[in-house]
Length: 523
Image (cartoon, rainbow, N blue to C red; front, side):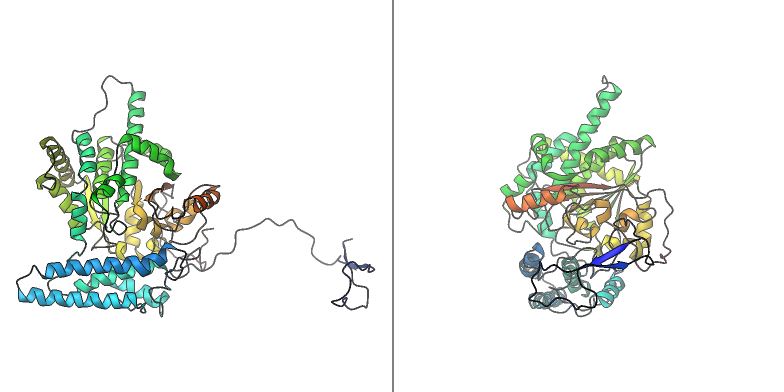
């Protein structure tokens, strides 16, 4: 019979506060025969809390968190970026001769000044004005449901930052003549023009179609392809170093240093890829090719040199048969300074074929660039490369909500053999941009993008430039603490990167029937 003993005598009260702790007290036995049997419980995951845009699965980074990059961004970087945007619009204003255009652009600049007042004064987040864009309802639903009364500093950083760029677009989209104006276009073009060394390093190598040695064995050719794939994956990864929102005022030499693509440099930088699934990625691509090739999607990040690197990578995937079709997903309008728009896409291909951006280049270098550009334009004509833009990419939602808020886009991506999310912003949106431990598995960190039925294989290629870091393996927390100690600021330096893969649930039927549970668990 089970018995429970207690050091309180029968009929006596508890010992007074000043009683000696080691006083000897008689023991009393209680009969527990009628209580449930003792069990051996197994530890379970914590019960899921309700996850929504203002309550991420782990604590959100917010602008008032002084220890985070969120604070530096909301207090300093965003006003600086907005100030440069106002300067750009003013420069354009001074180039106009038509009174109608001048007056209309002046109103745009006044709205930008108002946004600067709201941003600097930490105003409440108001609804987006209906400017005819397809994302207005999504924005205002999210603000009404989750952010009533929130301001720039106490809303989650990711949402507040996205909201600022949507408000900036509104400054022009509500005008008569300047609806498509891109205040960052000059910066994007100028940065690519100053990337000559890295541009020609790649064009001189890939102008001619890729060919394997004819006298090599199949095993030798496969190894050649594998090594080239791994190296070009790194080129694609580190091309993300050219992020204009972070490189405000960098010199040409500093840009060149960030864009170094020589083989020796790439070999040394693989050690800086803290979460590295590149080798599994290669296996998946080979499996796809054995099934006669498949579709690969790029959710693009930066225009200019990074987009150029993405296209070099996509070109190799097509030529090697690792993919048969590539979809590129850009933004509907200018976004986070340097994100790719359709205008940026067209400009890159056309300037490669027809432009004269590099006056100091040799004729051989220019011809190599023209050949690349002509081949890429031919891919477009043949439907092997497809450029797309969906309104969801420019909303405040994270990709945890892609399945519920943009089911058409989720269904479209589910038909891809691999979706490559490029860059820091896309990684933040995949992982809900919250303070998850560095050891958190990537598939857990991206929630429904890994677990929903029909979720495609997803890879995030990201140079680390903000606080959220996941997918570093079982010892990831130790790695992060060591870097915190030895290299303060490592999370925003761009020195480290991740290439993280989710196997998803490809092949399963996509379903949008809501779960009977209040909130599904991803833990």
